[in-house]
Image (cartoon, rainbow, N blue to C red; front, side, top):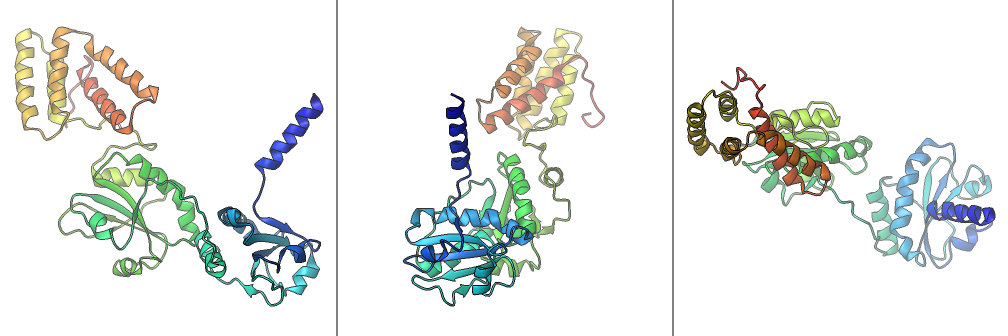
Length: 365
C-alpha cells in the first residue's frame, strides 16, 4: 500500500514538473541537433542570473512549439558542466542561444535579438516556417493600437489611462500584474478606461506623444479638446486607484469594491436624514414631497430610490435594517454580476442615511 502511494506520488511529481524544453548532454546532443528538425539551443550555466531570468520565458517558448516537436526542437544544455560542447560552439558567455538548421551542426546562427517571448517566437517562426500556438492571456486592460487609439483615448466622453510599454521592458513586465488589477477594479466604470499600447508596434502614436522610456503612463481626461497628462504617481494598486478616483470622479476601493460614498447624492442624503428625524407624519409627508421634486431634477438613476425607501419606511419601520441585511447577504453570496454588486452596494450606502443616529454633515446641507 505504501509503495503504491509513493509511486503514485513520484509519478504525479514528474508529470507536474514536465517540461517541453529538451535537456541536452554530450551523449544525446548529436542524436537530436542537426538531424531532421530545426533546433534552438540555449547554452546556460546554473549560476547565471540572466539564465534564470530567461528560464520561464524559454519554457513558455517550448510550450508554444510543443505541438510541433517533430519539426522544431527547443533545447538547452548546461555548458558550464559540459565544457567540451561549450568550446565546440565557442560559447563565451551565458546564456548564448544558437539556431541549428536541419542537417547542420557546424556554424549555427547565433541568436542576437530580444530575450522576450514575442521576439523569440517571431525568430523561431521566421526560421522554421512553423507557427507557434500561443494561449492568449485574458486581460481586462483595453488594448490600443494605431487603429483604435483616437476612438478610445481621445473619446471626449471617456477618461482614459494609457500605459505605453515595450514587450522587452523589465519594468513593464513588473507593472503588468498590478496594472491588470487596476483594470479589473474599473471594469464596471464605463467612462474610466484602463488601457495600454505597445509603443514598439505603434510607433506613430509613440512619436506623437514623445515617448522616450518605458513604461510611460499618460492620462487623457474627458473633454472636447483632450490634452494628455503625465502620470507621476506611484506604481502600486492603491496609487493608481487614488489617482483615478480623483480624476474620474469615481469611488473605487483597492480590490474593485465601492466606497461608502459611492452613488450618494448630497442633497438627497440631507433630505433622508431630515425624513428620519421628522417628528410628525405631516413633517414626513412634506419631506417625501420635497424629495420627489429634487429627485426629478437629478441625473442619477438612484435618485428615485430615496423616495422609494421613504415610502417603504412609512409601511414598515424596520425596513432599512432588513433591506441592508438582505442586500449584504446577496452581495456576499458571490452569485451576482459585478454590475449588480455595484448596484446593491450603492443601495446600501443610500439606506445608511436613514438610520436614526445619522447626522447631516456640513457638505450635505
